Length: 331
Image 1 (tube, helix red, strand yellow):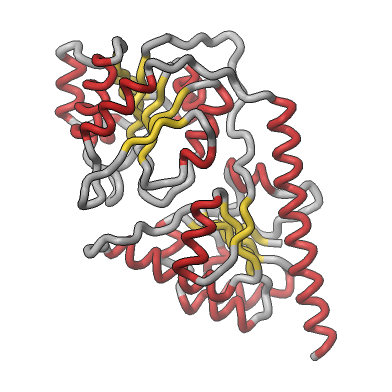
Image 2 (image 1 turned 180 degrees about the vertical axis):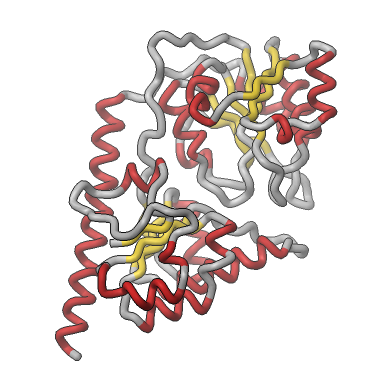
C-alpha cells in the first residue's frame, strides 16, 4: 500500500502492523505525481490519502483523483480538516483545498474522519458517509515533570487564514489568565510566530515567552494547568490529544471539533464574521482555571484504543483490496 504522507505521528499510529508501505519516505510524496502513480500503480493494492495539508491539496486535485480512478486504485481518504463554511470570502488556499476535497471524496472508496461533527459536515457538504475513528495517543507523560496550577499556555504556530493574529490572542488569553488568578506563557517553535507586540509584553514582564523545539511540545504542554489551542476552523487537533495524554485542560475554539475529541475542553466562540471573539476567549480561560487539572489518560486504555483504530484500518484495507481483486477478475 501507499500512504500520503508516507510517515508521521498519526499515520504511523493508525497503520496496522501487517500493512507494508511502498515507496520512498520523501516529502512531498512521489505518489502525488500523476506520472509516478501511473507508472507504479501495479506495486500497490491500496492508496491512503490523509487530507488536511495545503501542500497536498495544491497537487492532488481533479486530475490526480481521476488518474487514481482510471488505474482502478482503491482510494481511502482520511479527512483531518473540513474547510470552513458560511464565509463569503475565501482565500485562494481555502478555495484550492475545498476543490481538492471535493475531487478526492468523489473518488474515494472509503472515507474516514475523527469526530461525529466532521462526519456530519462531510455528509452534508460532500454527500459521503465517513467512518469515525478515534485519534490515538499522541504522547507519553513524563513522570518527573510537574505542572503549575494557574499556568496558562498559549500555543502559537504559523499564521493562517483561519487563526487570528498573535497579538489579539495573547491579549485575550492574558486577560483571562489574570482574571483567573494565573499567569500566561506563550509557547512557539519559532520566534517569528510570536510577533513583536507580544515580545514587548514579555519584556515588560506581563507574560512569558518560551521558544522550544518541536520535540519538547508534549513536555511544554504537560507543565500547564490550561492550554489555549487556537486551531484553524474545521480541524481536529493533535495537541488536544497530547493534552489528554499528559493531563492538561484545553481551551479551544468552537469552530473545530476539539470538544468532541475530549470532555476536558472549554470552548470559546467567534464573532459574527467567524473570527476571534476576544471576550469569549477571556471568559473561557478564566473559567478553565477554576477547574481542577485532569489526570493523564490511562495508558492501558490508550493502548487498547490504538489497537481498535488499527483494526478498523486493517478491515478497510482488506475490503477495498478484495473489491479491487474481484473487479479485476470480472473484466
